[in-house]
Length: 545
Image (cartoon, rainbow, N blue to C red; front, side, top):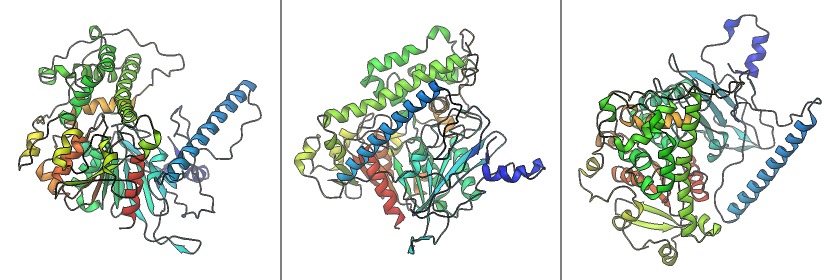
């Protein structure tokens, strides 16, 4: 159990163990600090063997103890040297991007507060808060204006939040909340799939809002799987969402899952060697087929995904480790393929990549424009080198952007046609028994307790896509009607092969007022310079509304 230092200090002076509440959090809110003031960094007292690099927040002036061994000191010096080099390279890169006029992340800051919230008998959520805490704060006699509240929803599922996620927001204007979703990050139990479905995650966002005493979220930002949750939350609680910022749109339709994890999918077809490695990682002789006919019926093309699912959900730690490694290698191969395509388009010129045009689509008129970082229209020859016609309509441009389905002429039922693969499912797919040797657990117990949360939850939601989505199709007409009035800025990498542009384009069809911005040389990463530029610019724009 983790406690705030402030909470522990009181507890030590109070002999009653009942002092510690079952649900705890936001018990300490330091005032907003001016740039010339030292922000207070909260510490945890953590007796667990948590190896997460976010698990303990250390004082910046912490010094090594005098009894450190020489070899340990040498290792520490080497690590410190690498960190300094990394920081220097990062600083140099940041300055380079700023010199090009691109927006970069705000400077790193420690959290103002953190806490946990128990949402049912199984799950306890972890969250952190950054930026401003109250309205009307001022600094050096300069009024900063009304504080905006922002909720950041991570991807995965299962990825968890990191301090860098708060840096997409201006800490002088926003109260920023990072939430580790069920089974993710430092929420407990780690990797837990029980009571883990889309609508439960939606309810968690609303419970956290009420828990923190926030009237409404002025901005909800979600990327990849986080965009799925952000859309669903806005659809269930429209009055509580002021605006949405989406990155790498995902709605977890079966076609989206199949693109990435089916033997018949586009990712497998475009990366046959990497798919072969992914496919062969799970030795079929060590897997006994499920007897549940409904689970396997007509889904032979997903057998590799199902094999990884069986291993990840097994009680064998060694099997989980092998499956997790294979799962991430495949995802990274797909992720990296977009970076390779970007390099080819720009002849490996980093500056050309950083300054690549952004396609902005106005679906009301079916017109589009290609703009630079300053919103000025880009010369036609630069757009032409990337294979686009500056005078083309979106109807002409969409086929180049789409990856896994042909363009369908707009009609009243066009979106329903694209959702044909969605079927009602009310049962979770059972895990097939694994035939393997007993796990070779390390003497220190590391292997035994290995919980690859992101691989487990991503695989769980992908295998059980319709069940885990609570039989909801986010693009259905009735659900989209609930959010038409909510402002939304969507940023979609044209070369994204994890969450391909198809979903963003379908979302735009269903949500004409949504602002869709497509950096032409970018892939999936939120840290791609052009995507970071667009996201930070979006949060700044909405902070002024």
